[in-house]
Structure formats: structure tokens, C-alpha cells
Image (tube, rainbow, N blue to C red; front, side, top):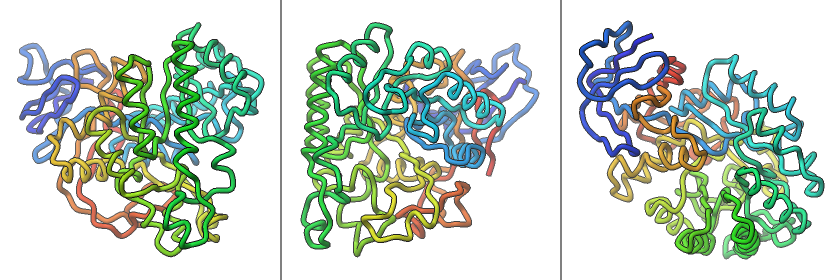
Length: 416
């Protein structure tokens, strides 16, 4: 199928393109950006008047829940590729489980699903999983999800093994003992509400351990869900010193802080917790400076999961359809060019994945595109969200920016 996308504003951070141009697609690949090649004859024309034409968004953390529904929510939000963690039920510690998940996602024909494999069997933190087999089955990196590895010798062996075979390790930096039984940031709000706090040191102690092992082994390390100013400084310093480390931030942490808990609002319970205003502002700056990328940290939960006392409610929120508008809001507030706003959702996460064929409109790249109306107003509600989970602290908020068409491999997967 040959497709011409015409009359749109093309924004491609990797190639530093921000201009009125047309995009030409053939056989699921980008052919050209600009004026129509002489030998190109479109079989389908898409009018993008008034829309931004950008690479499809890449979400480095989204739990799939009910696969079909959540992948539909992804394309409804302009996301063409999402990475899911291994701590599913059952955990992704066997090649057969990975192959089944990848095939099921492919059969749906919606967003691309890239799984992370378990570092240890059954995520028990002790026995290494068969990383080579998991990689062959489709795993793009290895992680424990939110499960800890308490034995640092086992963690060292995992880093060494991964480094030997060129695999990347993705870890959520949260010390088990410093964070256990905690529900909120260890600050004035938790004290006032009588909630057990999780100190920033729970993050920084874990980061220090992971960075030390990464420097010793040479493994490619990605830190998931950085939540503090101190953590951001540690990552930036390690990057400057040449350590192969990257990190991401959940989109909610870019806008919310500990005060948003209000009076025990379970919609604002996250893992890691929402931290101070100072931490939030440092995260915003870290993304703007290219230290970190953004992800939805999408966690579909049932109504019963949130209809509990704050300490018993499950942490997390829906995020797939909010990633784009919340990123655009951050970009406007930070007065960033649209190129810089979209980079941590496209080119930068593609680089972390080592995928030159994703995250750009380069000739030969996969024709994954997001066509969105940057200023279209809408409200997040049970009626407007495609995800089965409707739980987000942004319910009822006026948002601006709406994905209208998502193409995955040149195939129109979502249209609104």
C-alpha cells in the first residue's frame, strides 16, 4: 500500500524537521518527507490539514492488562510501540510465555508490543532466567519489574551475564527495606496524614548500587521511574562520566506532587510515590535537558483496587491516552519547541531500545506515525478513555492535544 499524508505540519525530532511537508509511505516504510517523488503514485491519501504529523510515540512502560483493550487505548493515544514489564501473571520468565504474548499482540494488529524478560526465574531474585532464550523469543531487555533482587551477588551475576551477551538491564531503583510498608513520600503531607513514608534515600541507595555494578560490568543500564531530584542528579552525573545509563519518568510525576494526595485520594497513589514540588521541578528539568525520557507508566486497575483506604489501595493509574496531552502541557509550560517536547516520546526512547527503525520519519524507517491536533480540548472521563481502567488523578481536567490517527507499519490502527 502506497500512502501520501498531505498538508500536515511534520515534526521529526531525530531529523530536526519541523515544517509543512508531505510524508510518503510504501510497503509499511517511510519513503520520503517533502514533495512527492516523481515515481510515487499514492493508493491512499490522508489529509492532515491542521494536524501535526510525528513519529508514533514509544512508551517504555505500560502494563497491558486486557491486551486487546489496552492496545486499542495505546493507538487511541498515538502510541505505536509500548514496552511491557515482566511482572505479569504469569511472569515472563519462559520463552514460550513471551512468544505467546508477542504473537497475541501481533494478531491484534494494533500497537507494537515489546516485552521485557525476567532477570530471575519466577522473579524470585535468586536463580537467573534463561536470558538468551527469552531474547530469542522477543524480549528487548531484562528487568524485575517492581520485584527486588535482595541478593546483590545474584544481581552482579545478572549484570555480568547481560553484559557478556549485549543485553540491557532495566531496574526500578527502590530499596526494598527502606520502602517496605511505605505509602507516600516521606515528607510533610505523609506526616500530616499519618501515612508511613518512603524516603528519597530508598531511591538513591538503589541507584548507587545499580550504577556501581553497571560501571564494574559495562552493562547497559536503564533506570525506570526516577522520582526525585537527588536521583536525577545521580543519573546525570553518571552519564557525564561515561556510564551507559539512561532513565525514564512517569508522566504523572511531571505534573503532580505530594500535595496532590489531598485528603487520602487513592487516585494519587503511585509507586514510586509523588514527591515534593522541588523533586517534581527537577524531573521536569531533567527531561528538558535530555537526561530522562517520558513514559505513561500505565497501570490498569479495577474500581475495587482504588475503592480502599489509601494504604490498601493499589498504586498506579491509567496513562496511555494521557501521555501525549500531558507531555504537550509540560512542553508549553516549559516553553519548549515542539521538537524538544516530542523527542522524549519518540527519538530518545527509540535510542534506548537500540531501534533505528522506530521513533523517526527517516527513509526506510517503519511507517509508525501519530497524527494529532495539538490544541484540541478534551476532558479525561469514563466516556472519553478507551482503556478499561478509568482511574487517573486527571479525571475531569481540561486537556489539550488529541491523537486523531495512528499508523503502525503503514497500517491505520486508530482513528478518532
